[in-house]
Length: 373
Image (tube, rainbow, N blue to C red; front, side, top):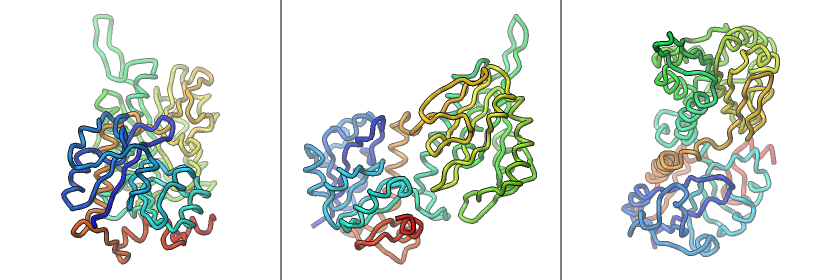
């Protein structure tokens, strides 16, 4: 009997993405699996039920869907109520954020759910097409640039008018990962002058290739796995002194620095904000994990001393069509090599499978989470 893969509606408030778009549903179906779709699951991402065509079977209600499902695809981590609906021994794929959802992890373990936290996929070359963090960060980087331009008190591009020439805005972007690079590219397309800072010296080439100028603070925090390590107190102060001068001259600041599984580093201090021009804007992409700015209020837009500070949450959801399509492609690239004749055969010797697993056979197999629990 072919494996049954199920896609429920996302129930977290404000979440508009869906874990599987019609194109990837059809591709999974061609592998011989059965796709179950909760009625209306794709509507918030502008994919009506009929768009899934014959590749998916519609199921009325989450309880009926979970009862049949061998594998469940989700975007957001399931609530405890959703976990209870999962069949014991079934498989779950989602962005699980175990450090924020300890009780959920315990229940997944107790129900012997094989769960994969898509954000734990190792950052190795062959897994790039499966990297959920990168695909969703690309959406976020584009959106925060537009948000900064919208909130700014002046034009981003240089304008030559009968009334004179208006100088372009200066934008400082902190963090040159996928989101930061997308923000650099978008701000440059909008005509702004862009400076960017990243603790990894290797980011210089990427920043400059997009038309940005690297801010050199003399601090390096390169580490293994494509992430940045946490800075020492001395390094943070050295970084802060240089950044403060550039931030004070900026019309807009976009912060994107994050350390997986930890609160976002506080890079922009209250003193830095008070040194900025009135009418300047800060858009803090790291608001989800507390924010890079000391004055960020997650989910709010506030004003301090004439500076607007935005802390948007769940930015990829604001562009649900491409975000859903990219996420679904990540899932397909991750799981399709393990599907043979409609059956799922997980290869636990595969580094990508092993390192992204959170729970398996009644155990928490992700060591940092196991220690946390």
